Length: 631
Image 1 (cartoon, helix red, strand yellow):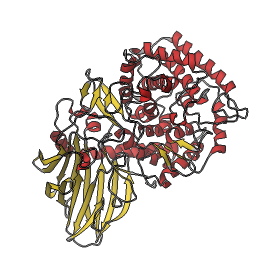
Image 2 (tube, helix red, strand yellow):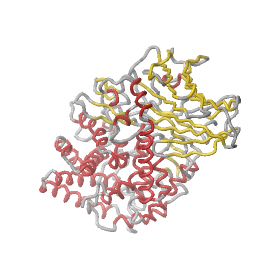
Image 3 (cartoon, rainbow, N blue to C red):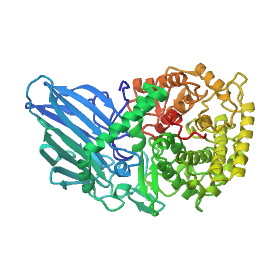
Image 4 (cartoon, helix red, strand yellow):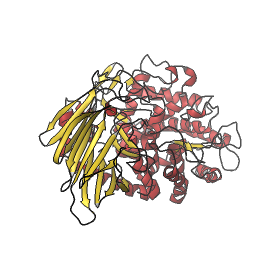
């Protein structure tokens, strides 16, 4: 990979179990949780009696890092010292549709050594993990640690907080402080033990002079989520499987799983290169684990999947609609069932007596406590996003049903979908002063891009009725969307082929990302050529690291940038539009998991990191696949 990752994914399981390197080299600084707080894991190698560091900080000299390669589910780092090369292979098998591996909270580190000076060497390696892995912050409470029985040929230890405050609090910048972290190793002269100094540590070691060693990091969270008062477990242990069994199974299928992950990543890369070029493909590889690891998959009391996102580095909201919506291209491509899992909590809440409005909610809680909306003080009307969330939910439902070629999931929610479409028909042609998903920019009246979302939502319901065999109602919504579009083309025009930020602000501009579905789905709502001239106008607004979101500021959003790029009439136009985004990640001094909100003039992060919205980078690949195209 030519892209220099702003942060390197190493362990990527879920919003709590997440470890990254936020530096050029694994030995430059301590490993971190995605929030940037320490989740210290150190690695040392003893080569012919001399100790070196290959991961984390410490007094021992650092090995030389010679290469890094990032694939969809793995990171490979090669280190050298004293005539020996260490190959570190980090793998988290987040295989969509394969829920056993997608949810199993076990991540691998495979270490092998080889001589590069044609001499024989003795090499042993050790990995040490601190109590920060099982606490919000080190030292905040007492930690217990002890050996663990995983399998006869595996050495393992575990640790967890003594008090175990299971699901006791929610928030954004917090880490798990209940459940148990496991460190295990399988290899020659394997050993696992507990060490204590100012912190509690787990250490595992093995000799890799002649054979490789396989380390695993695992986390048993015992209970994963509260869902309207009910405590839920993750999919992997829905039938009572223990974490010890899960770890043992992970050792048993490592080779097979590695091959599956490699095959998936290779195909993803080739498909993405064909769709949008090599730099585009590299960004998709880097985004993959981040997107999935900001979710948790659980089952409700009816045995149905809930796929719960955490709105990372913002307010910690759970299943935020305007975070789910930009993420869906990756899931429509590989597993639309997960989009259903995002929608189920929203429908349940919207249909309950606790939700007082005729439009869709923003969220259903703060991760991991899903007991009702927390954004905007719960149900304060001033800070709701009515047009935004109604349009989002209608398009999430429509695209999911089209991707699956089955609209039966929508049928049970038709009264609610009709209600939301009515809200769009009444309020979406010229939206009042309200928020959209770009809420960091504040309220805006007469938002042209938000009106596009309303038009797409109304058109989407027409598609659903076509699929359900109701051509009369389908035509009603299709005609309404076209009528709204005709008004839009007239009232949003700047007169030079471009279109405004707001209907009452001539000469302004904004990304028109919400209309991308008209192209991707072949809806035919807007006249041909309307958005060709709009896209052609964007070159006037480009900065070194991309086009600003609109004329009010110089910052942009990565997800919306790729959605907008997908409006390009050809691949050359798409590649030219997204190349500055690649450059932003490659050069940015903000060493964090891929930010989606950054300055186009400097590539500096403005806010947000590790968010699921990077699934939106897959929009061009979704278009190229034809999965959502109506023929």
